[in-house]
Image (cartoon, rainbow, N blue to C red; front, side, top):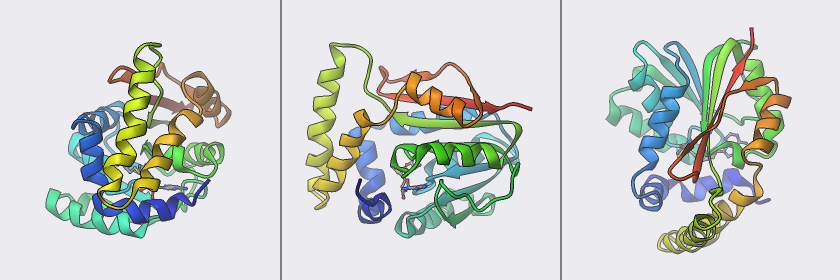
Length: 227
Ligand SMILES: C[S@@+](CC[C@H](N)C(=O)[O-])C[C@H]1O[C@@H](n2cnc3c(N)ncnc32)[C@H](O)[C@@H]1O
């Protein structure tokens, strides 16, 4: 697997624009739904925060909430800092450099955790999930948003062919064809639905029924750390 941190350093500049184009603008509503699902108004950790899109949705949705965004890509975090100012939420979000596999926080620190389009890019998803469980408070929720191959047998090949062609094609306008090819090729290879739920359970979560969005092209998995 290529070093995903360096991939994201390379795609950072056009990342938000490409996301919006590829999802026809629906990506914002997916993140809003993720923020909704964590049901938390206190201290929230957004892992693989990228340009802080989810962290911003979280603090806007939950009054009095403070969020920490963590990501290994300095380029993404630089863009995130600018975005926090523009969104007027600089005082409600801190950004730190780091990876999901080794979170630099004490046990039981957070009321909730979000991670959007990030777990697939971690080197070790199970270790990352265990780390999330460790830093969550008992009773806390994790919300994980990730791409999926749709279940519908007619729609799935059409959709997969669309993203297999469009991701690298749009990426090529910015000289990032290979990076976007990797990002789309990794979707069917990553554990989905039942197999991902098993990983979450192995990490210690009680998992709710997954929420399938936009015809099953993305899924929100919600896990609870039991008291
Ligand atoms: C597809 S972006 C998602 C960004 C953001 N969450 C969003 O919704 O737009 C994936 C992010 O995962 C980060 N990443 C890569 N490897 C990681 C790791 N091991 N731990 C945490 N984040 C990682 C990348 O730097 C990148 O910013």
